[in-house]
Length: 482
Ligand SMILES: NC(=O)C1=CN([C@@H]2O[C@H](COP(=O)(O)OP(=O)(O)OC[C@H]3O[C@@H](n4cnc5c(N)ncnc54)[C@H](OP(=O)(O)O)[C@@H]3O)[C@@H](O)[C@H]2O)C=CC1
Ligand SMILES: O=C1O[C@H](COP(=O)(O)O)[C@@H](O)[C@H](O)[C@H]1O
Image (tube, rainbow, N blue to C red; front, side):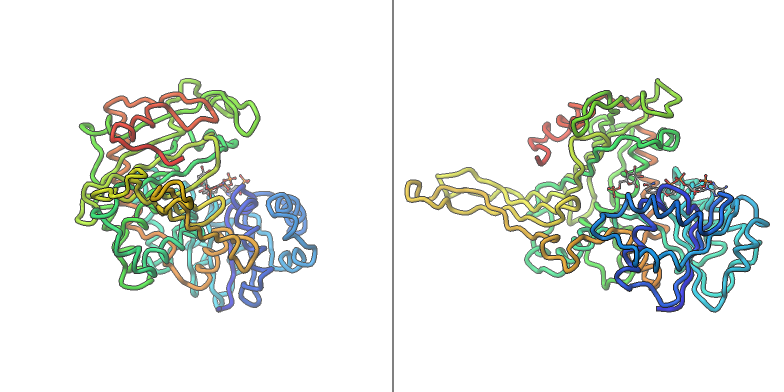
């Protein structure tokens, strides 16, 4: 590892306190950071490093499980820090940062700020002479809010950083089980051999959350679940399930295969949107035993008539040889009954059932991304009884990742992604063309919803979304995986 400096813009924000600094704390505890590592925490608050750290310590203690917290680890972690006060909207404010930087070391700029600041920060870094030596930039999602705005951000950032130095985060790619999906598909011959329309009936991808808007109403109301979750996280999961084997694990090979899938997604337009998309918005209800308000009663709501979706279900098709005729059902929402991300591959039924003692039950593969990370293969076996000669029953072959983890915990996605950015490995970061093609597909779908007036149907907080989401799949003779 080369000597590295990490510069976090937006160091006082929610993402930094809940995800970024805890991930770095764990990496430091595992001695995985480079020697002489330095962190510049950049934000607007007028405080000194000590005061910044004492506030950060409090916030991190509530984000890190107490079994992993120790004063000794904290002291080592705190020793990396310098706090630099700056308003990023003006280059002259970056002079202190410019003095702190050292062009003999790698400078890793991490933009944990509102996306509207990505382009101005790059312009100002350049004007303040901060971009000398080996400089890399990490961009948080979302990159833009549609194709045109994402092209604009990519162009500005590309003026100062070559594509090989731009690390666009989709934190789902850093999740252990998402990487395991690649291993499952491309390191197991029997899985790979059965991975197409000849064997697979359909695919379901569910990303369910129990949380509501969490104080982010003004951000969220402008984007909704389609832009916040589908354009990025669900699209990445779909690509990893559907892509052809890349030539190698290089970033370029993986990105090339993913972008082919996004381009092969059948557009959902004004003619098809009503049958392929369901939008929902949560009303009042219950979440984890507590009564919770509706979306339009949440703190910060400025538009009680808002039609922004907090739930979406989509039936998508990939028009290529491997996936012809295999629907991909996607659903994601806030205030659903449980926090759960899973991919379910349902195989076709056998062409003929020779066992009179049971139904023709299809196999399925359940890839659980969170919680209880693991993979289950649902297999049909004989009932262990003398009464029923060839009665059938479904059993699970179970790969439990937590139980087999060397670390007694599943590392957070940001730990993997920080390590890779420090090591210069872009394979788990998103390329420009993937992002732009994904926006192109989402823009068509969003526009079609507007033109056909597909409104967000109310659902009770704590339920699995509007009844129409059940119909979307049931009308094809299938049902959501329970
Ligand atoms: N929070 C989350 O769970 C997730 C967030 N993201 C993305 O991460 C990014 C950050 O999100 P989040 O942490 O939630 O946002 P916050 O609003 O909590 O934090 C934004 C940070 O940027 C700083 N900032 C804003 N404007 C300026 C400015 N002109 N000059 C200097 N500092 C400024 C804020 O400082 P100040 O406190 O002074 O306003 C704060 O430190 C966003 O792009 C978001 O979409 C992505 C996935 C999940
Ligand atoms: O990017 C985002 O992701 C979170 C969900 O992430 P997870 O790792 O907890 O599954 C989501 O709540 C948020 O709205 C979105 O911006």
